[in-house]
Length: 79
Image 1 (cartoon, rainbow, N blue to C red):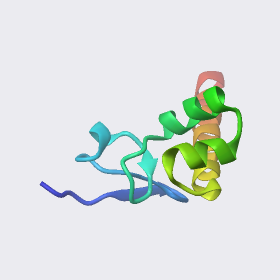
Image 2 (spheres, helix red, strand yellow; image 1 turned 120 degrees about the vertical axis):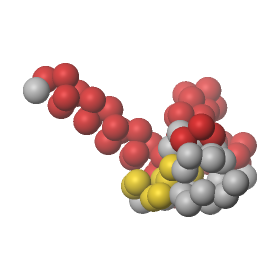
Image 3 (cartoon, rainbow, N blue to C red; image 1 turned 45 degrees about the vertical axis):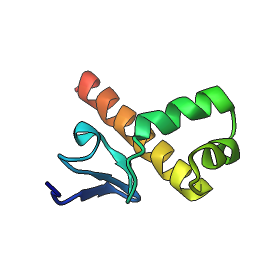
């Protein structure tokens, strides 16, 4: 079953048939959380990009999305 993916942020999309609906890098099955964790483990955008065979812009898009999500959570907690 191939359902439609929806772009929710620049370079980030979700789809019910992709990684259980988790946000992923566009046109991949790489979840945003995996990029964030890889950066913590590997230490540089270039190393993460190389490890996942993606480009540095994709890594940065995942990080921006994760930061925006954390900000939304913070605002929700403070509201």
